[in-house]
Length: 128
Image (tube, rainbow, N blue to C red; front, top):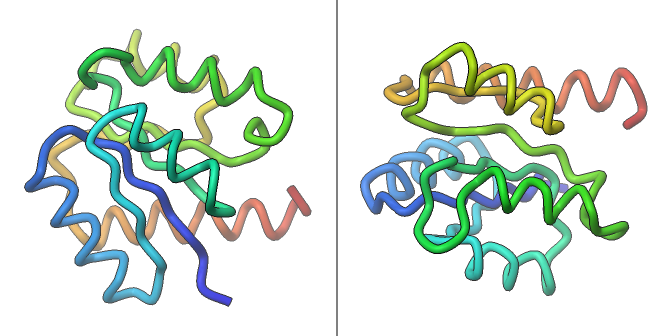
């Protein structure tokens, strides 16, 4: 079964690039331009990984992360931050809030795929 990945980012070019890279690698991809669209996808689909931008309209990535971690049905979905915020402080906060990885923009297709495959490998090895 192909893994399902939800990408929440307000930049169309990032959404399109990530979708193309992940689909070419065999993943099923869902896109959302904001938290509301992302949460709507989560109501109907069983998602295996969320790629989450921090700087989103209306509700930022930190608020989305807190919401996900507070809901029993959603809290076990791994979340990787996918963001232009490169400060060490932001990385520490992201990981402290429960992110499994912190991927900084810009990134290459190869780097993105390696990081995602590493996340799934870790989950599989540790029966998470």
